[in-house]
Length: 179
Image (cartoon, rainbow, N blue to C red; front, side, top):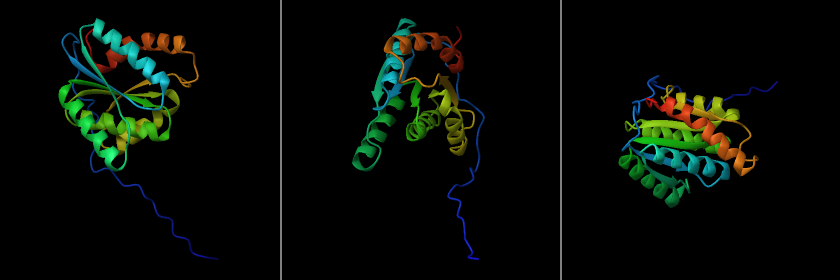
């Protein structure tokens, strides 16, 4: 019988926090960033609906699309994310709807939260557990995660937009907005 060595590539987190970060409390006059990606048209529709509702509640909304993640494109993406995070007080980051996009959603949300921004990551139900696990591995077990239904991307646009409107009050509550 041969001897097999199994290596575990994961590492232990030095410390983690249950603190979700600062509550938003109010929207009027707040600068809100919404991070979208290049993968999910359904997330574009949700982001559009939430941006419209946030603006109606007095927030100033900037939507930014994350693109390349490696090499020079990755450097540019990180610089753009950093610039956006510096400009806003609140970050809404999505969409965790597959393995890699969930990883990047949590990565970008943790990036914002670590810089003191009121932050929420958005995943679909199927990827919530993965998102929470990644957040814990990154030391932010308390990261706010808002969960949308799964599947989302295969639904008609009108239905997705209705889901977004229905979820808006819960999103505000998760961010700590006094409604």
